[in-house]
Image 1 (tube, one colour):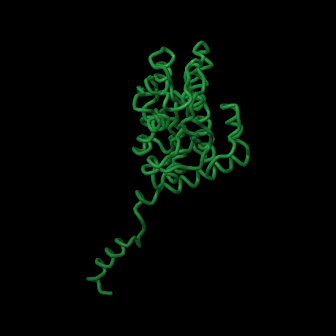
Image 2 (cartoon, one colour):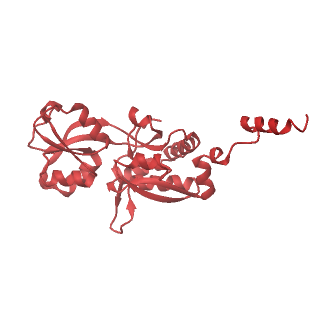
Image 3 (tube, helix red, strand yellow):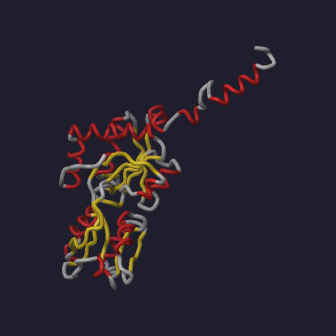
Length: 264
């Protein structure tokens, strides 16, 4: 090959990737995590028993323990990043977190913008109200004020079934939603069973109880769209923790019941 043609040939090879991919594209999130031995995981701090701040002001709960389990299996230290229902997906998309472990349900809308691992814990959403209130169907929500956390899965599910006459009041986090119900600002609350259970235990005078199921929705871990290498690795960790009984132990510790059958 003539000397004159070698530069052009080299450019063609570079364009085809023969000389190797740029490190910016070659490294996945998993490669970076393993290299740094550090992983940032978004967790809730207002959603007991999945994630909340203890008396020592440190995060604790099922999601927090799951975050620590995954970090340990990766040989990495964990940076716990507190998020809310409204901003947790944005934190993943803007790379403020490598994973989101924050009672995240899977649905077609979310699958358009992020990917999910296998499920790691059970969860369900429902409508709760005072025992004296009759609520046997969604139609009976007409004329009633209902508190719900903005952007949470129960917000989306409630919106689907609520009749036109329902007064849905949306709050920015679970603490505000619960406070609105406890104070009488709203008559009904739509939330996760765990939040409701914690609320009812602390406020027995309310006489609140389960009324309507909104959705049976196991929790999944959120991962940036297309990051298959990290997703597959986390799936391996989840599968191993299921087989060893570690996930069942976490669920018994925080939910009072084993994980049961969870989707992959």
